[in-house]
Structures are given as structure tokens and as C-alpha cells.
Length: 451
Image (cartoon, rainbow, N blue to C red; front, side, top):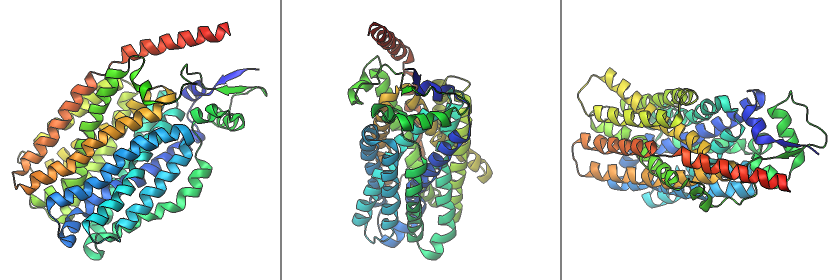
């Protein structure tokens, strides 16, 4: 009987049609997810006008989905390690598609907030799972690029929300962009049939037939013996995925720094995605022009995600992210200075690259930092804690807007968050975690040999 380490097989494989299929599904899901996140920000001025709500109330309405995202990221990130990633992703897609569409039927702030909270469970829950899926199946040489390219779909979804909002909100009302979010429900049977299951889950439940099928797709040129047993070579393979493992093997301090980095970057991302349209409208731009700034922000996010992923495959991903966070903070401050509209578009594009784009690369970084057995849990909890920043951003910026303070103070607060995130990332310690992991693997191999 021979053993095949399927995780090593996936890491060393060459990119092929199987990887393209996984990338396509994960990216499509993130596009839908990004649309559902951004649609409230695109419609916010119209919602405030039609429902006659204040800036503070509008901030609470926007944060309701983000609060759901925090709980969803923590809950569904851990659930996937128990019931399988494929089913978990399908559940999340149903939640955020169905309940975002239902939000279009509401006519008061409370009902809207409750429905958006439920949608947020799915929006937040799907993110750590698709990141873990992409990280697990991507060849090592192109892992950062693939993960970043996949997550650039978030910005594509944001652009789609802004374009549809600009095209239809003025004519048909804000509800129409919410109704459109229900269409992806038709994809659920195809997701359940076509998306591969998590390798860790398959090994844990000893699904050898499905593992062989996956292995043959990952490396179609390989010849596997008839008696081959597919395993996950991680020394932690038999451990249960618990929160405690995030703080073992020298990972405790770095785990906390990931939480701080996710908190600050998601604060930036959601402050901008929720309030940029309104802030630019307050600066004297029409609704159509303000939505165009959102398009610029998300185009920058795509460039930042793909470019940052490319750089991360060639340099240390940690320092690539530190620089991106710092640049994002600096350019956010530059937005407060007088400049031409053309230059403002450029500045906003750079901010998108170094906020949303950087966060996309940060998901990839987090996925690589943790071993397979706790990858979904690690990303899910970091994302969940980070949602506190996402929740606080619309509320805090809404409060500042309601005080009628200079708009520059809004951007200064957002910029400060990016600077704190850069410091936190710089303090993540790979050496202790890697040394502890190597020692665990050595002990694991010695135990195996003795047996």
C-alpha cells in the first residue's frame, strides 16, 4: 500500500483546466458577494431620501449587514471544516442572494436592517471558505496571483453595483438593484455539482474514491497505483479544528496582529464602500459622478489585487502588504487636498488598490500562514474580528457626517486606520510559527517511523 500526499501534489502541480474551473467558480461567487456588499453603498443616497432617514440611521442600516458578516465569517469558517466546504459555500450563496433581494421589498429602516443582517451572514461566511478553497487547490508558484485574481471579483461586483445603480436607480428606484441580487440562486445546483470538496474534509472522512478523482484532475499526467491511499501530510491532520490551535506553535501574537490588520483594513474598505458616494455628493458632485468615483475605486482595487498578488509571488507577501497599507493611508490623506477631477480619479484608484486590493492579498496571506487543518477557521476568525472594523466604519463616518464637520476629517480617520494596519502586519512573526511547525512535523515523522 502506497500513500500519496494530496496537499503536496496540489502545491507542486502545474496550472491546468481543473485549476481554471476552481478559479472560475470562486471568482464568480466573489463577484456576486462583492455586488451584494456594495449595493447598499451605491443606493445609500436614494435610500436616505426615500425612507427619510438621517446619516446616523443610514450608518446603522449599512452596518447591520456588516454585523451579520462578522458572525457569518466566524460561524461558517468553522462549520466548513465540519460539514464540508462545498455545502457551506452553497448555503452562504443562498443566504446573501435571497435576503439581499428581499431587502428591496422593505420600506422601513428596522425591517431593512434585519433582512440585511441575515444576508450578511452569507456574505461574511463565504469569504473565508473561497479563500481556503483557492489556497488549497492553487499551485504554489501562482498561489498568490490566483487568490488575488479570484478576490478581484469583489471589486468587479462593486463596479457592477455602481454601474447598475447609475443606470437604473434614478429611473426605477433603489429597490431594483437589490432585486437583481436574487438571480444567482439559480447557480446553486451547479455549485454543488461542479465545485470540488475540501481536501482536508475528504481525508478526514476517508473518501478515497473522491480523493482519487480530485488527484487525477490536479495532476492528470501522474499515474497512481491501484492501492494508493490519499492522505494529507500535515502533522496536524488528526487534530480537530479549534480556535486554540490558532494560538499554538508560536502563532499567538501573529494571530492577534492578523486580527488588528483585518480590523483596520476592513474599516477602510467599508468606510469607503458605504460612504464614498455620499461624501462625494456632499462635495458637490452629482449622484452619477459620485458613483463614477466608486467605479474608479474598484478598478483600482482590481489592479491592486492582481498586482499585489503578482508582487507577493516574487517578494515576501508580508512586506508587500505593509507597503500597500502605508501607501493607501498616505493617498487617503491626499484626497483632502485641492486637486483637479482627473487627479482625484487617480488618487481614488490608488486608494482602491491599497485598501480593497490590499485586503484581498491579506486574505491570501492569512490562508498561507495557517496549516490546512485550521485554514478556514483561521481566515474565518480573522475576518470575523475584522468585521468589527467594518461595522464601526459606517457608524463612525455616519456620526461624523451628522456633525457637519469638514469632510477632510472623515478621510483623515480612514487614513489613520491604514497606518495602524501597516504596523500590525510588520509585527507578524513567521519564524516562531515556522520553527514550531517544523518541530511538530519532525516529531510526527519520528512517531510514524516508530509505528
